[in-house]
Amino acid sequence: MTRGRFITFEGIDGAGKSTQIDVIESVLKARGIEVVRTREPGGTPLGEMIREKLLTVKMDPATETLLFFASRAEHIAQVIEPALARGAWVLSDRFTDATYAYQVGGRGFSAEKVEALEAWTHGNLQPDRTVLFDINPEEASKRLKGTRTLDRFEKENIEFFKRVRQAYLDRATQNPTRFFIVNSMRDKEQISDELRQEFTTWG
Ligand code: TYD
Image (cartoon, rainbow, N blue to C red; front, side, top):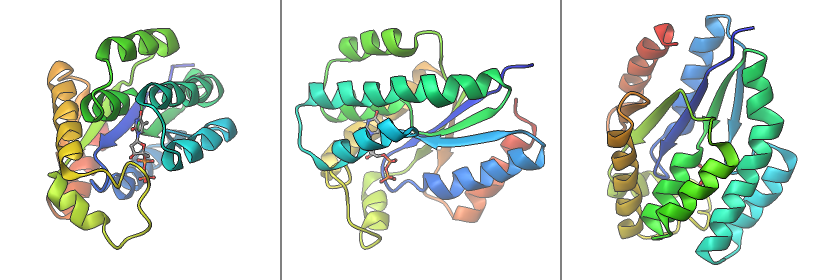
């Protein structure tokens, strides 16, 4: 059995990831591919419990980073690896790039410590493709307002999201073949068309 593909989706809150993941999921299913759609933090029963704490409880940045990796370790063991091994394609709404963007870029937590946790948790496993939805934080914040109650991360200020966005763009520069940057400041339909085109043939 050929191993599946691991595709991750990233971007600051309000970049419009979810709608576009739906589009990619249907393109891949139409190609006859088994798709496993999942998310971080979360993706497993224990991961969802950790998610609830991460989104609601104020905590030290070290605790926060460790909890993201705890959720990730469980996610890899229970969901991601088994799916890839049986040939399914995994679509994950966020993965380790989010820790570099939010905890290192946003909070100023140590990149070296995150690198060590990454190597320890999933050294050999990296996404095959990462779609980065790029948007300016002012626009993203306008889109988020009024939609629902904001969680602990979504309530951070514009300066925080500027750092997160820049950290994502830096990751993309460092990994140019893995990243596919989508300009999220356009019409939903335009973005869907671009992604349909890309994922009709990719992989
Ligand atoms: P997400 O599921 O994208 O939020 P929502 O369901 O509200 O669209 O992600 C939850 C939050 O967790 C998001 O604000 C980003 C943050 N996050 C980190 O700070 N570090 C991480 O490693 C991950 C995976 C997420």
